[in-house]
Length: 79
Image (cartoon, rainbow, N blue to C red):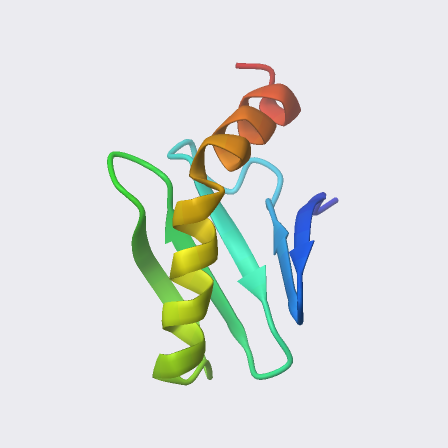
């Protein structure tokens, strides 16, 4: 199960269950998907078919909601 933790405009932010230990969030958009590390700093981990302008918008949203994503990660994964 991939729980949705937030929706903003065309973006869905979600976790993949136990994909790996390092905190991160996935972002789905009509154009493709991206994965952002949440630690030690917010950073792009990977992307598929997402234009640069859209990646910047996604990264801005991840940075704005970083603490909420970390809290949701901790709650979801019991940390």
